[in-house]
Image (cartoon, rainbow, N blue to C red; front, top):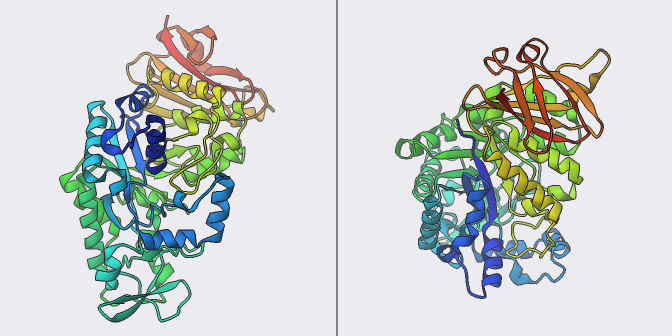
Length: 492
């Protein structure tokens, strides 16, 4: 089994920077070939173009009128100007590639460029809401959650002389997104329209990242909107069951990634998602809570971890280089790349960017590259491409104490990978800032049949071990604080 390695690109900022460097307008249809080669060399399997779809003036005006957004924008861009705001890429005016980015033809050309290199394309799907400029708001106000006049969190929409009050989209834990309109996921006609859009999206790419996917779950939607009854009989099936089945009927290999929180990830996996965000892993990692992290990994079925998307940052999170020291960053990078499941890296992460830019902006600051972080990722990714990591069979191992009254084994994350027996690879990460020891019970077949040479592919350590010892007592490890090792096991 190959585990995806996904690269998220902020499309609008990226194309603007390419245009500045090239001195000509670069859009999706004329991206220089040289820009794609590093992605292939790094071992990426998918490129996620975040923010491809059309936005509109109403939603952009809402963004410009948001004082908090403007404050954050000015902090990120000291020379901020209003033309740097393009509106939220999650308040879409339609599932068409924006004309200023190259339109549908440019997107198709870019996809062909990826396909020629064996790379796949992922795009966004937003099930919960659309932007204020979307034609459905005017043509089909009945597809949205209705509100009484002047209800907080709602807006007035006039269609053919008839006034409607519709709710803005929202997450129940935050204020409404005032640049959006809340779709009524209870209605069969709303669902059918969304599934039709998904089928069109599936003709343009190889997978989708579904924004706030848990908001479309029936019990979540009902809890949020039960006091605002639907105006038609409510659907009795899950939206995601319908949607995923409909798309897979014509695109069986289409990849589904859910942005998900609130411990609803297992439910979304059961409904058909290939992968769900592993936000809990991220949270305990940046909290430097090694025990909670290991409990998370060992407290779930192996299949759940293998169907989780592991990340250190994305467009919603602070830049990881601003949160972790270089040794911590190195250990964390190997951790998320060495676990089974989707591995998600973010544009700028590989060069040590430290400024998180709001998604509404089409420009970001020019930051100095961090050579140590560039080298870290270049070395790590280039080494991983020649190993079993991310391919074949994997198991997250449970280390045991090296001796009584030594609890430091709980600071390790250790993953065994194997493609072509008898050789195998072992990811070793010590999350603690101090030296830790443990024994690791390896599960590779034929351990006792051979004696073994162990080489740390990320360092210069080489060892030899008796197979009987590895079989009977496990591999002894004594690892420096925040250290990351990748051992290749080869029979002597």
